[in-house]
Length: 162
Image (tube, rainbow, N blue to C red; front, side, top):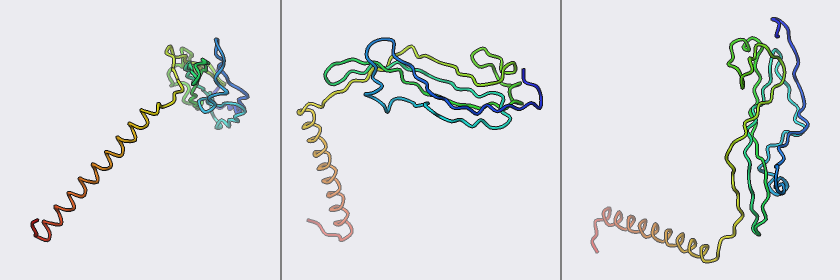
């Protein structure tokens, strides 16, 4: 239990956090940008903190390459929060844990029941050409509207009729 006036230093280093997929090949090496990296992360906890809380949310992900190979990845996001000792008496419980009875570093995990599906695709040449012609047609339409506006404005200002 936290004693009034007692201070502790909870500064620490998180060496490694990983959520390894339970089936198939890992896609962590193929999609490094999707991983939140808590490896060798030094944390300086403010003086007077009674608790340092990591709230981790894990989302399973399936990745399909261009050639149809499936691999799996568990993405996660982390929210960090330092709770001052004097505030711990008033704070709501975290996952059923009464904070006034605890002092230290806490990890809570939330595993999402849905799976994110990522698939690599190539754009077909006909879709690319169709999109290109659509963009060119849009540019021509906007330029013709602009030209008509300029032409009408010029006629109005000068007062000439064609």
